[in-house]
Picture 1 (cartoon, rainbow, N blue to C red):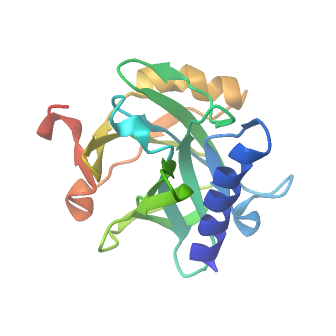
Picture 2: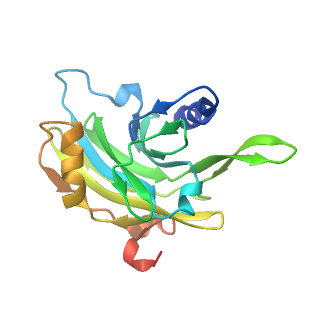
Length: 210
C-alpha cells in the first residue's frame, strides 16, 4: 500500500501538468499518520531540491519515510514544472523547498529517494522517466510528542542519470521559513543521522564538490 500511495501521488502530479496549475506543499503525509486536533504531534522539518540546473531536470524529487511496523508513510517533495511546483523557498545555483511534516509521534525511518520526470520523445510523445535506489537504505528516526526536529537540507546532485542527495545543516536558514509555515512551531532541535547507512544515495555535501 505504501509504494502504491507514493506512486499514485507522483503520477497524479505529473499528469496534472496537462490540466492546470497546482501549488503543492513540500510534504505529503498518509492520512493515518496525520494527528487529529488535540492529539499529540511531532514535527519534522528540512529542505529538499536540486543543487543546480542539471539536477533540476528531474522535475519530481522525493525523500520517503514510513512509520516502522506499518504500511503508512510520508514524503518530502520538490517539484517544479510550469504548472506544478512546490514553493521555491531557497534560490541559488538550484533551488529548494522547505517542508514541515506534522506527524503522529513514534519510530520512523527514511528508506528511499526516488526521482521522476516527464520528457518529450520525438515520434512517441510525452513519457515518464524515473530512478530509485537499487537497494533501499534505512535511517531510523524517533519522534517524540511536542517536539520539532530538524532533518537537514537534501540537495540532489546528478551526473547524467545518476543522482544522490547532498546533506547539509542549514538550520539557521530554514528555521524562520518553517516558523512561517507553522506559527508556534516548537524550538527546532537537530536530529542526528548516521548517513553511512544511506550511502551512496545520501552523503554529506563536503564529500562531493558539485
